[in-house]
Image (cartoon, rainbow, N blue to C red; front, side, top):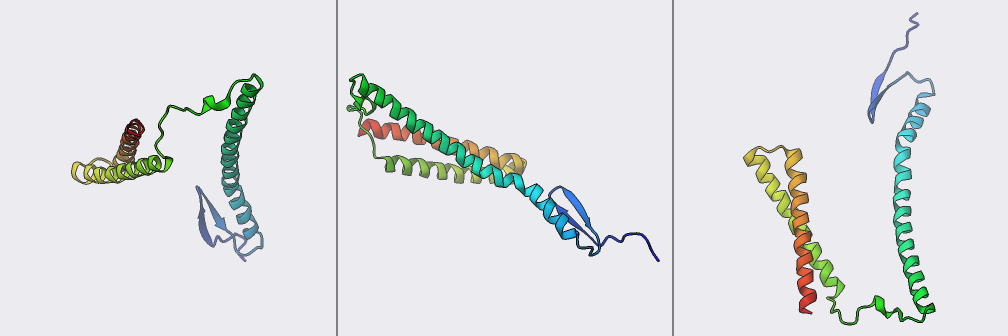
Length: 154
């Protein structure tokens, strides 16, 4: 009679590893507890992110409303929030221009990163994120100036 425990298989989970014992009924319970302990933080983070975004939006709207009510109580016109002499480009044009330049910047960044990686031997972990972010930023920066030019021409 062998009194030692035989380990059946090794199951990798995240960073830790569990050795599963032969069927004793508790192995699935322990596995479920371990998975819920590991996965619990991801479940909490998403509602927190949405809660923070909602809180920021709510504070922005409520502060704007309070400012306007205070102006009306003092007898001032609340139309100062809306510029009369500003010519404004339609919002859809601004979004389309910025999105197009952002995507072109990302595509150009991937292309330049591939050239850097395969022809010049730059590490892949450095070339791709660096050039993608750089070119996306340049695209958004040029979109800002194009939008400014559209506002001046309108």
